[in-house]
Length: 142
Image 1 (spheres, rainbow, N blue to C red):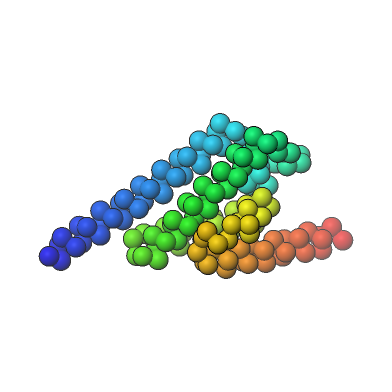
Image 2 (cartoon, rainbow, N blue to C red):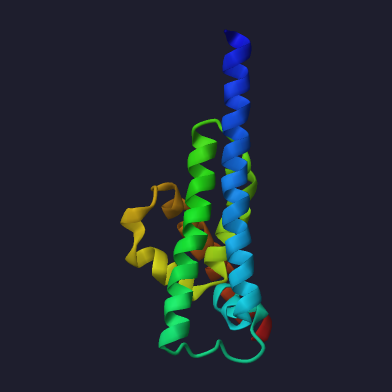
């Protein structure tokens, strides 16, 4: 019986990891098909100002924001259920994503009720790190 439980647990973890991988593929495909989305979700990648969003790009960006947050949320849920350690390794990526995307922060704020409260702590951490970066930038310039 213990062996069956272990096999089932391993199968569930593999399934969870496959689901995350599939979501990452969708996000990557969106960036490949619409490269202008990339700097919206990582402002460090912008060459010049962040692109202005027309209605079609707004819909794409909204969809991608939802997909990214779904990937992040799913990783956290799987980790909390003991199915995968992915969330621990993804915390830095999630914080970095919030830190470098005004659009993602705003989208999350508008839809926070859809996601677990763990995002709130990561968002606070990202905001604090962003503020430290700004202060360091001002100090270096002055």
